[in-house]
Amino acid sequence: MSKFLVSDNGYTHNGWLSDEMTFVGAIMGDIVGSAYERKGCRIKTINFDMFPKEPSFTDDTVMTIAVAKCLSGYNSIPNNSHGLAYTMQAIGRKYMGVGYGHNFKQWLKSDNPQPYNSYGNGSAMRVAAAGLFGLNLLDCQAIARITAGVSHNHPEGIKGAEAVASAIRLAKFHRSKECIKEYIEKKYGYNLSRNLNDIREIYEFDSSCQGSVPEAIICFLESEDMESAIRLAVSLGGDADTQACIAGSIAGAFYGSAPEIFLEKLEHMLPQEFIDIISVFITQNNRLDKTICEKRQVDHSELNKVLQERYPIVFGS
Image (cartoon, rainbow, N blue to C red; front, top):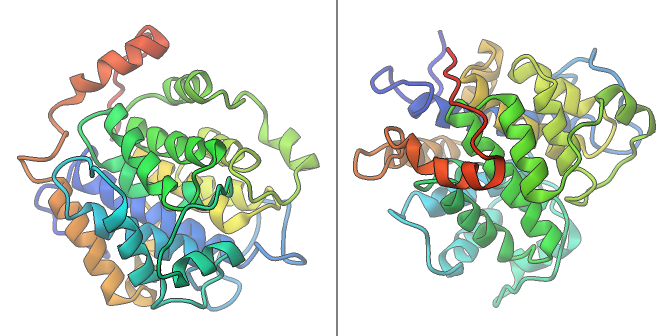
């Protein structure tokens, strides 16, 4: 059995293990999807080789790592975004050839980085750590707003980040798919009641939050495990690395497991720096004075407000 990051000590589906699997799902979604993201490589089937060439991570992984590094230094919600922007630039500049969009690449190089009103899905792809951090749903949404707002401060960019972080949070704490679906629909107005087979027939590449995040969440909702969530996201023939990153991160938190091949790939292809950052985040995030693992009740008020608390906690394996 491969051990990607942490020891057996403290492994629980709502603690260390869910945190680790969230990162595994996000990064493997990015890696698998990266082979099918470019024009001419996009596919419309779930039956494909997950590793058709030497796999590589993209900007989705680099920025996911950057957010995790920044948040691992906080015990509560940051009161500004200065540290985050600095960390994103510091890590991003070390990995400049990983597929950043033009505007974000300029942001990385800037001496005074400012948000540029983007509604691209870059805000949603990097938000995994925000979904795991904080004492409740409102906390993780506040953190998601900060992580998005440093660059993607358009309302749709912020909404996409919040929605993904919320789905990860609810998945980690064993809420049912029905609960996650209804909460995201009511809170953010996304239509998650569509069928993937119908979407796939007409779907085209779309890198906006509003045109890719809902579909990625539906891929998780229709999945059976982490691998199927990633396969479904790639099969849309769209922004495959980012949509699979999003679907994979939620699936990782929900299922709390990953194929052994995923763990083996990550052990051999991620820079040690990235593995160390994830490990530190997981350790810090599950400290007794910081973790929310024994405080599930703090989410009840927000869920009750949005859903009238019709969905009880559903504990999985």
